[in-house]
Image (cartoon, rainbow, N blue to C red; front, side):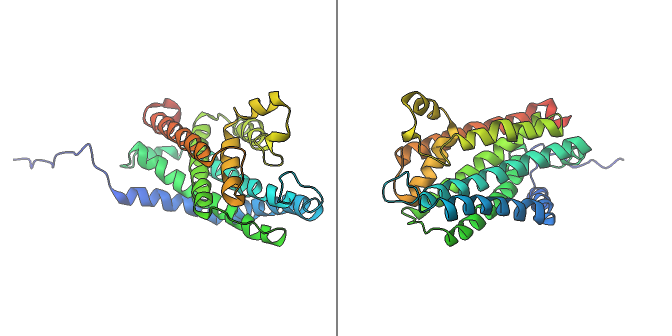
Length: 265
């Protein structure tokens, strides 16, 4: 008599595969820390030197604050956003490009767990870079940290949002050039036009209204508001928009991994 096999549990969910994937993603960027951590910090430090040491005390765009104090929050968040996005987009694209995505597909992981593992690792990288930039910025200007918990929450939310968005870019990218296109022609213009280096209140009315359509503006303004205590929008609006946008992107990423053939290509 042939022994009966134990019934297959379609809802099987183990924590070990999740933590294995998370550990793999953390090790991936820590192994090449000179490229993933040191290089972006050096680039941000150059921005800090240009706008902090040369222009910081000579001009002011917000009453009561130097230009260095105004621009530092934007540079910190720029480091968080860029590195969170780059980590997931590059990792997922390389897995597809090299064919190692097949190993991920046979692991007993849900779509939500896959998104969570990639996103958490990217958030660690983004927040390490952002924290490093914040520490270096102390050499150029001191920030009042008016609402520290709100500032940390906005940094974490921004990191989560763009780590998840990076997964979508990694799924749709067909080549290295295509992946670079998302960074150079979508992400960076949104960041630079979102008020990193200037308040949108100094723009003509038409361009002010156009800037309000930029989702990056609400993240940057909310983070700056939490650090300096002043912003162009109420803080609750910035958090509401960022939270809603994060939920939409998260849902899209889970849906794509669950159903899209591109994830398996």
